[in-house]
Figure (spheres, one colour):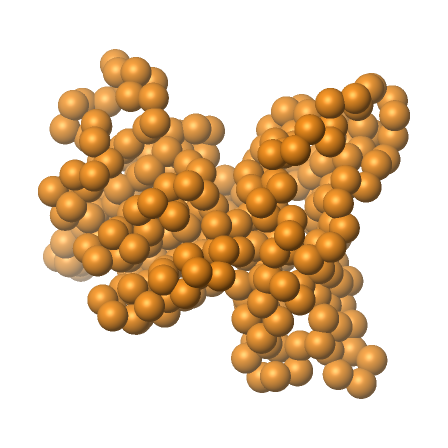
Amino acid sequence: MASSAPLLRIGVVGYGHLGQFLVEKILSEGPGVGLELAFVWNRNPDKLKDMFSKQFILEDLSSFAERRCDVIVEVCHPHIVKEFGVRFLAKSHFMVGSPSALSDPALNHDLRQAAQQNDRTVYVPSGALWGGQDIQRLSDSGTLKGLFIRMSKHPSCFRLTKDVLSDWSEGEGRRVLFSGSVAELCPLAPNNVNTMAAAAVAAGALGFDRVQGEIVSDTDLSDFHVVEVEVTGPDGFTVHTVRRNPAKLGAVTGSATYKSFWNSLIVCKGHGGRVYLC
């Protein structure tokens, strides 16, 4: 017997490649998994013209509450999380597609407080992170001792706030761009290290300051992004995983991550006033 439960209304903030993928999935498959599109917003509204019925286009993000969303999904930029995150949580659950924003301790605190006060959930999608729930279980049990993540990509796939790749050339090979805490790394590559940020959320006992990250430019990686995760536990316990995520030249997000985001969105049906890795 078909369920008579109302569909969850989803607002999508951002209409880049990932936003387009999610909107298309909601429109085509959403009703089958209990979702419907409430609105789409994009920084450049001209990109939405002739794409949708006007009923779906939100021109002013400040008027999001009028659309009565159950979940708002940010797939745009960390600045949106900072400017609207607390406001979103006053009205709906919030899926943070740019969890690098959570490296800001004040914003992290404010979002957690807003979630608790409003009984809403801040969802952090796993993205390209493999084994996030296992890391979280170790952290929750007090046995997580260390976490290191390395992300290697073709230089055309990086979007950095500092001009450290302006001199790259084809065939140069491998270059370490940064190695240090994820807290320091997130402002340098806010669009590239959301997987690391998700890991830092999972490793709550360590936090962004104690999770270590490294980004590597490698001109040999023309077809893949590579994500390596090294987990350290008690008494010599270690796990080392390597994930190769198919990606085109210049792509910030690997292709397998799109489906991962969709699977994460399906989970976002309310998990109380907290941060939840999905």
